[in-house]
Image 1 (tube, helix red, strand yellow):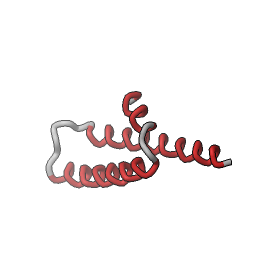
Image 2 (cartoon, rainbow, N blue to C red):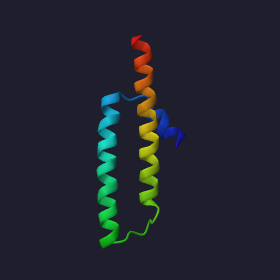
Image 3 (tube, rainbow, N blue to C red):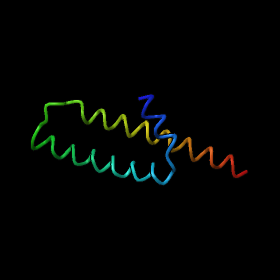
Image 4 (cartoon, rainbow, N blue to C red):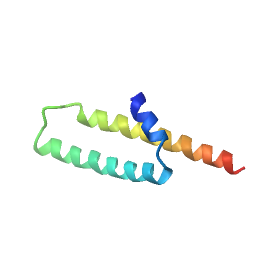
Length: 71
């Protein structure tokens, strides 16, 4: 996850917000698909949720840094 975190820090806030939206849609679709057609990787939903948590954390940090820089 450290590699992902570093990649997220290099992106803009708008890009991160787009990724959050896309990831939330993927999680919703994965939930629906798991009910109908279970996949072989049972941890995929957990992995996506963890990725979303990391993404939201980095996004919040970047927003705070931007507020500090404005002052």
